[in-house]
Image 1 (cartoon, rainbow, N blue to C red):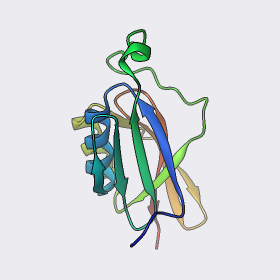
Image 2 (image 1 turned 30 degrees about the vertical axis):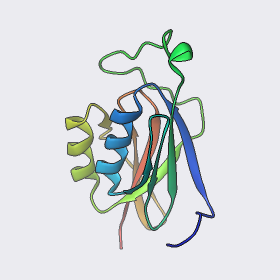
Image 3 (image 1 turned 180 degrees about the vertical axis):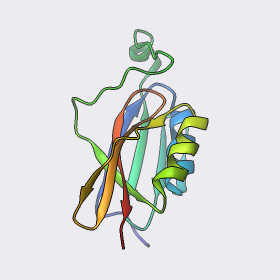
Image 4 (image 1 turned 45 degrees about the horizontal axis):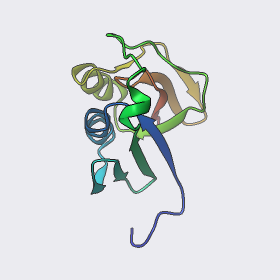
Length: 127
């Protein structure tokens, strides 16, 4: 892909370094940019911008272990080659992917969460 992405998503996190590595490792994304405040990851499907919440605002944010999931916002999804492999990697990196799954047209999907509790969907193609 050359030039700026036509579509993507942004997420605001307390620990940008940890969450950037989490998403990069699980979803096999390439790191296009990395600074103290923002990391830009990209795959053939999407660009993912991870913003660090400013310290003066993040001091009052507590991340439990395991994290409390926050699924009241929009959920994004990524397609992976194997949900089982993604589940293993997510657990090693402080997140998780549920065992309950649903079938859609041509895929299976289940919920996952990152180390700060942000919820996402993971899809695996049935093709």
